[in-house]
Length: 114
Length: 112
Image 1 (cartoon, chains in turn red, green):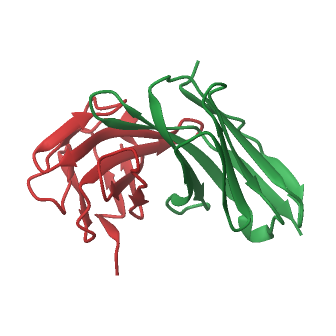
Image 2: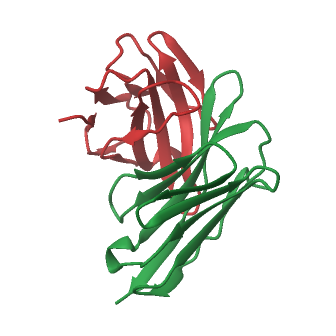
Image 3: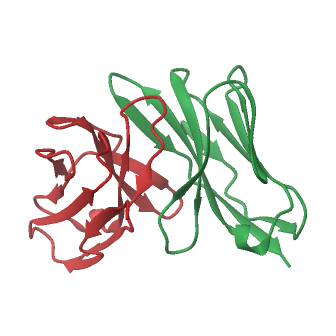
């Protein structure tokens, strides 16, 4: 089944404890992206990757890191999480990094930082 | 001014009516436009994409794009209670890379 998977689905952590949220797609997609969704603010792009070893900042990259060493995986790293990073996170992918980038979303990761 | 604006709603329509959802955008280098549907507690799923001015129809859904007015809309004909969800407008812009900007979404309720 073609899909985008994220792990973990739910995570409660404490301020400053490094964490990684994994994202994997099995569709051979070039483009992958991370978003956070907060009430009233909608989806905001954190980072995106147009291909292996090519990443770029979205609108809200502060406090996050990403890497794209393999085409299928695009982990999101929070080196020192803070309470303002409490949010619902979505990973997405699309076949091409171009104008026809119709994105497919993972199930989401709900992160709480205390 | 936000880059992609939508009326947050809720928009309430009776079953069988036409639901009209609107979106305006401010970025003049926007290239592609998308409508996603998001049910409560679920991830967004793509409904329609539109790249050129005019209308694009797919079943009960019609997307309309007017680049001169920086306006994109989604019409849902014969609305069903199962259409009740939040509809997200997304704009893809090329700024050295392909960045996607979402509106905050419009909540739609279809009353049986």
